Image (cartoon, rainbow over the protein chains, first blue to last red):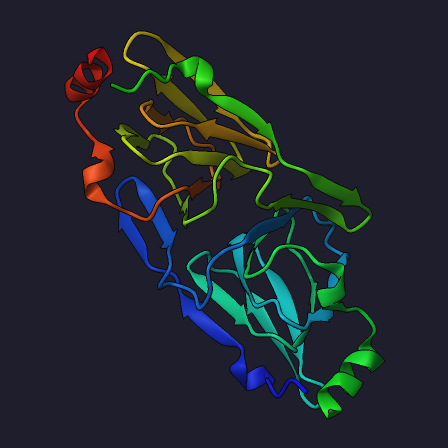
Length: 137
Length: 137
């Protein structure tokens, strides 16, 4: 049974250097709670699209709005919250065992995700009722 | 002496899934020639800014235009070429020993870089003449 709740979702400050040439943000070992096994990104997303709709058994991830904005809906089987991401220097850390959906993408937005594991379909819980059962133990 | 030339710079196709919900591009172990030790990105870059202006002794990197466009200038001490990046599914692989500069950023562009090593100032060659000497052996 995975006991993580939406209170275990964290806003991480991504270190960045700002000078006359713009902003440079850096993610290294100590910036996020895991080593990066996989990087993926969503782009050209229609603004009525709905993404996500799953939870992970073993994968942790950090989600960043690199351009534009979108909303992440987080659910631990008991409580649900909605977080607007729109800052490239904020990373949303999502631990294992949290249902997530992403929607309300602004035109031209880019969603970057760093994940702690490589792709493994068996790590996904794609049915919400199964997810809620998994949280009940 | 580092023998890499600008012909060792490669355009990598980043695998992506395109459906009605937009595009999802994925970078895993086999997508790029190294494991990712560091991710950094440039944003809020003024369009007259000039970035880069260095070479690496040990670090390899992959540069992607996640949003907008910019130009990467590559130099191996003998030859120079200029590449416009403007597609989120193309990664520019830059091996060790190549001088790079980035300029001509479009408004709102985002430059994502995945690097093979953590930050180490000693890995940078920041003076062009020193770089050219390093290529002469």
